[in-house]
Image (cartoon, rainbow, N blue to C red; front, side, top):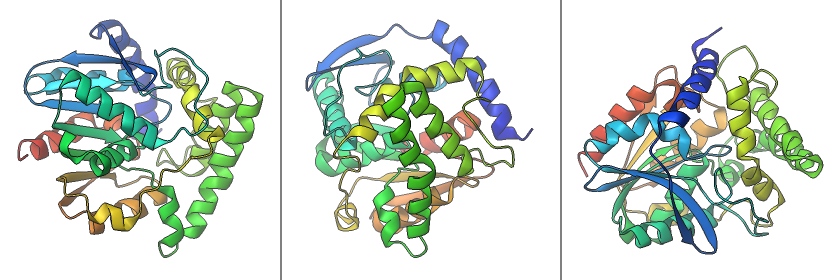
Length: 304
């Protein structure tokens, strides 16, 4: 079994232990939603934005180290654990989350803040910087899924079609049946895309029980996305060119092809971007290589 698959097992254990040791959550109301968050340390704020099928708990291992230098805040986006389970908006998208994050920053008086986002959380962070630049000091982005861009990237259209066929469309059909069916289809689809970076295919059935349960805790978010009329927030290349925020792009050497294509475009377009490709890492880089990701992020934040 290669490292990234071992990582899933170890991460399940860390997740379970962290859930016991974590700082007590607080709750804040923004834009008609409740957001749970943890807040640790003092000084300039670093806000952690989790990816899809995750929540604030995924950052537990980073809260202590970052809080030694910064005010570290990790929150759960509106449809993620342990926020109240509500009927999703029909227009849910990363734009909605970006507006929520802006409201959270203003209410807690955190801005301008460093924003660290992973996957869908990186998408949210990028939209925040575009819409509310005064609230953002710097960005650390790990593989933002700007999927519509693939249609305009050389050789990208088949990659977009593959994602839709193997992940998005099966998940959408699955959520019509149940949350578990939708999540299973999504996880199995990512396994087909080589999400784990190994020859051993990742499936919902092979996830450790603790990890599987945490993913199911956050099923409502993906249900909301797949059912939304505004699934992919508009963010054109021309708009990205105007984002002046200093940005670190963290990419996994063994991540999905679509992630590498999109990050290459972002590196070219963002005026103040630098990129670090983590050797051996996949899309799960913050779980696989937490120390390396933290070191890269802290080194970057120290300059801004």
